[in-house]
Image (cartoon, helix red, strand yellow):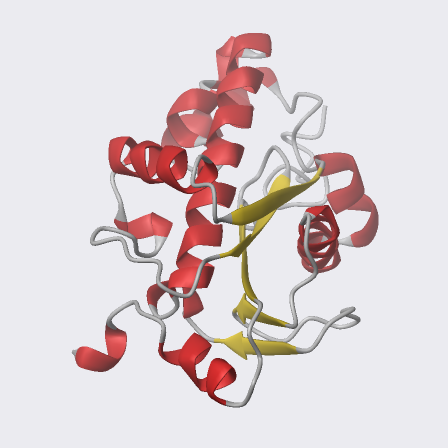
Length: 208
């Protein structure tokens, strides 16, 4: 299982050829039926260590919040987020919206990285050299840090939406297609943050 452990293997390979400033990028919310897609970019110091950092999906909500607080308050970590709302997702599709959120996050960094590690497949167009890593949030500390920041940021946004639209219980399912969410969608129809281009929201039964 060594090769599944999160670490700095990919970052070290880049530093070995003279690439020093490396950002990890990941997104949250791509598969949800409601709410925005959120991406984060993070540049970690070379000697960064954290015993519990890994893919945000493998962490409890409480531990994610703790790690988020640590990452975003660390004096040597540079980070930024990008948010693309449901209206833009419906207009340009979720893949393009996810890539747009990544570019927004990258542009928000206070320093420009030399290279970017991206979770998943390559992003095109993209303004900087990139390496796409399948399941990179499980393998790269830089990407894992971005995944935590993106996930916690989006979860907080969905809790805010829950206060505006309490009948959908967004704080519980964060907009994903759970049984509870589908039940409330059936009862109330879509609200302003639902993605009208997504099934089953797009079905006549829901598209009031």
